[in-house]
Image (cartoon, rainbow, N blue to C red; front, top):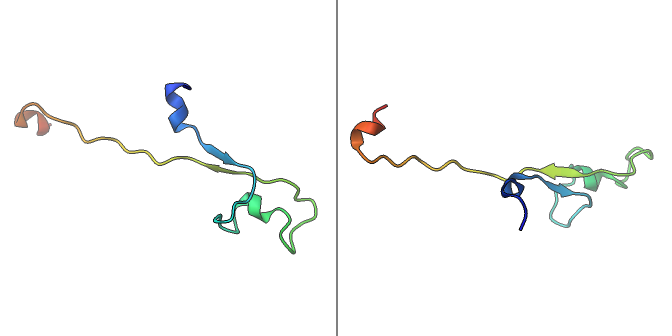
Length: 64
């Protein structure tokens, strides 16, 4: 098991996958008409996160 913060770490995608948009960096490498100097591209995707709503013991605490 990794660090607790590892769930917030970005996903690094170094190669083009079948369902990836064509404008993402890994898919641009080797695409027709691209610069011949473009030899590597990777996409960094940060996972979504949410903040839970607070729970209040008393209704008066929620008015703050």
